[in-house]
Image (tube, rainbow, N blue to C red; front, top):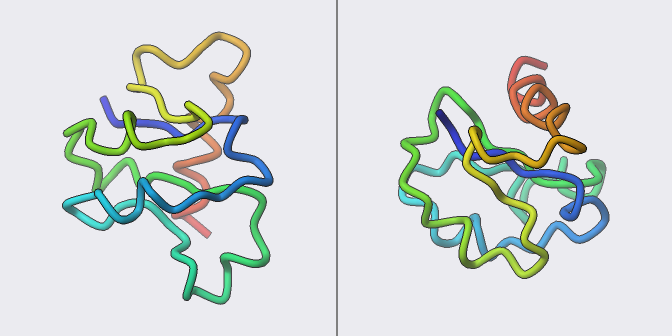
Length: 86
């Protein structure tokens, strides 16, 4: 199961998680034109290696292992995947 970025990231978009990801699966980066357009960051479920490096550095505790996403934020699992399909 992949990691998922959830609601606490909305409006924050802190990129500490981007900097520690060993496989570059968290987007958009600050230099990406999409960064200003989106409300939050997203983890690509097809690229994530489930290492967990991103979770402890998130200042708003928005990142969860896919099996541990709080019930009120389970829709974010699909939102993360959908971002990479567009």
